Image (cartoon, rainbow, N blue to C red; front, side, top):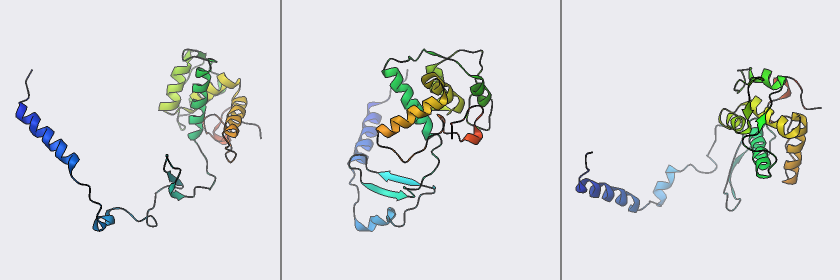
Length: 190
């Protein structure tokens, strides 16, 4: 093993410390580096930037316009899975059956998915990871069916949870964020 000379370590440490101690310029002539608030634009249909500590809104664009929430729905599904684990209703090792509609949906590679087979055994952990990493629509629905007995029942539970948080301006119709036209099998009533 080759040893690093002490002088090299001292010089490296000096460079790191001096860069940390350099004054940060706050002069007016440097303000041109930051966009003015009224000139700032985000290349997105909607956006909002909020100070987490104070709740102050720094920027918003179409913040009150209803838009499809897509995979944000999966985050709600994952939250409810974690809540069920914390409450002891399920464990990471609980086996999750795969219904035929979920299996068929998982084969649609035009959607974000991992292929699921009815003959294989999947755990809550495996489907949670598939939902959070890929984000696999069919895996989210399989978890919903486990927790709610059906996806529709689970969506009702999700809606109740949102209402308990004071969120009344969202409409959930699936555990994955898919619209009804993308679904295979049962869709949310109405």
